[in-house]
Image (tube, rainbow, N blue to C red; front, side, top):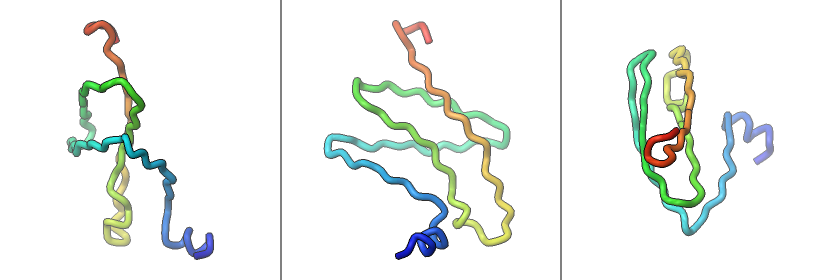
Amino acid sequence: MSIDDFKSYFSRMSINEYRDDSTFSSIKVSHTEGGHVFVTTELLAGTHNFSVAQICERMFPRGSEYQYSYCHMILMKLNNDSDL
């Protein structure tokens, strides 16, 4: 497949690394328009990756005028069980 063909079929691409010692976990959250979602978790020592994904525009009928939500991800670490 040529790069031009690739660009006509796909709008984005991600090259990732697979690690045998990694685990995958996910959560699905919903919110109302203008709302917020807060999630807490406890992490073990190690390397962690975080991502946010929205439904692809190809999942909607052409001309649906679907607009993506603005998204911000803020990560905080709790130190000494009390300090951010």
